[in-house]
Length: 112
Image (cartoon, rainbow, N blue to C red; front, top):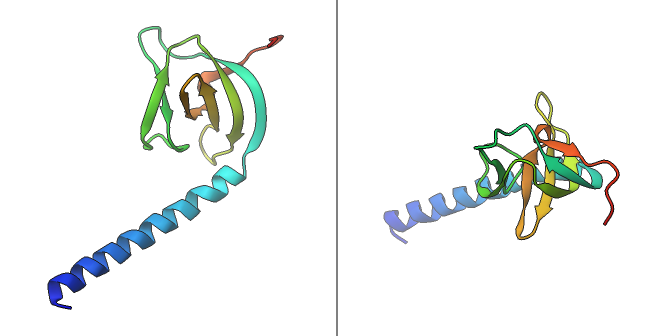
């Protein structure tokens, strides 16, 4: 194995370690969540804007979709985030991901 191959191997292993560590860092937060299983409405968003849906419960996470103000979403569970708002795992049609809980209002007296 030459020096160039060694560098590529070390870089690949470092990337694998960082990726694995990140997965474990997110996992406890997801596991510490609480079940909600209820309907909620997207609120607190201007009519011209949309609520971003994220792959993971973080504002810097990859965007997987968005919801218009006023739409109803199914809230599966939420997690508590220290010094921040809670994040909730929501689902509507083909869009499933995490949104900041401050933009959700539970729907009272709903019937399936």
